[in-house]
Figure 1 (cartoon, rainbow over the protein chains, first blue to last red):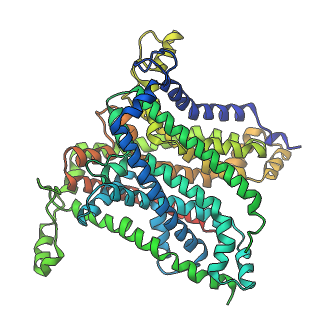
Figure 2 (cartoon, each protein chain N blue to C red; figure 1 turned 45 degrees about the vertical axis):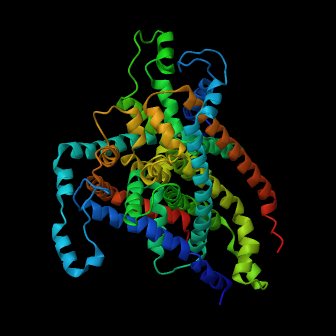
Figure 3 (tube, one colour; figure 1 turned 135 degrees about the horizontal axis):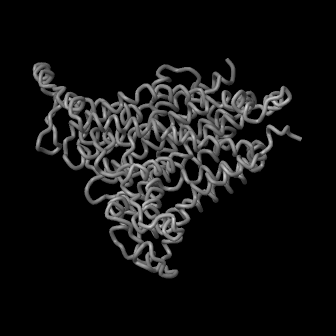
Length: 271
Length: 303
């Protein structure tokens, strides 16, 4: 058995438990209060779903939610395409001219403060005389989220055994065929995870959307933010709970999918 | 030619589309920021005087170059409002990063000590909040921290305080929000390095008579330093430019640079000044960004 130095101590367990409680408690409280019948957010008035009904009657909120969904789906799809291409180039392309600049441009937005990214994109759109709205927000989100897709897919590609695709080529596949038949099926779970990440990031973004959107096309976070600035409203609790539930469902689905493909994934996909 | 090299050629072609995209939408916009930062504010739409117009030819460019002004930058480094918001951003980012490290390390350490089969679950549990909306998580804290919120109610019920305390619009609330939001960014790189440490090293330290605490400081901690570095830059850089958290949780008397930029842009409509502030912020972050790039390259591009 492990030496006493490696055993899990009560200190380890306490730190972990407290940490997880800290991460989850506020969200749990938010969810509970979304079912509060009382208009005063802090007074418990019994269970009720009235704030959910209120949301479904709130036209402006619904429009913003619809806008966010559209932006999220389109930008996540574009970002997954571009990001996967970039990941393949970085992890399989070897050395090429401009590689350092390329990877630099793809890594920087992961940590770049959003106010900078948002402002610079807005100035570009204004400089190009582009009308601000759905398209500008979608393009902005694609730019940000493709970098996340790149790093998710790239880390999968880095862990992947290259001899598989090389074997396919030795057996007569051309590179494209080898990629489609061997590499792509193996990275597919991480491509799907990249799409999910891109979608949730887009759905979540306030700062970049605020800079790049135009009048009449507010996204959900922009609307939520303007409501939150005025104070806590039970309806916001309900909206937030629905977003959290949707994301939780998606994560469970994604982890199930990756488990299923994991069972299949190690045995090479049929050519 | 080896299969690997044949594969590399089409792989390089795959770079073309994302390369052009990032050049146009990430690099070129910085040129615009710099250009607007050097121009003057005007009451117009868009609200700045154009610096130059290529169509007008060389002579126009010459006069335009003469009209460039460093006034915005001069204002930023002399006006105490801006200088203070810079300093505040740095202080807040430093303090938050230190707090995150102090809180995140024991959690990551606890995760790495769990039996293997539990580690994946623990990691999942840390990642999930990162997927939940940032704004929602801050909003959740407003629920708790407001005047008649859960925190004051609990403290009153426990007779720890006799009057509700002010939590919202304080620096305490802001730090709480930052630590809460960025904790996964600190835990994950720490955990990644801690989990990789060979247990035989600790065993050896134990055989040589080291106590738990001594073995930790002599073996585990030095080996985890790459993770510490990654966690620190991963948190520090975005926190310096943070807008949402200080805006919603901190008081309005002291602003961070991200808030100043937002204010100049959205409220005062002074685009040139906002652009100049963005340039200054970028300059401040250049060194940490370069460190981050190196870490990221080492992580994702083995060899």
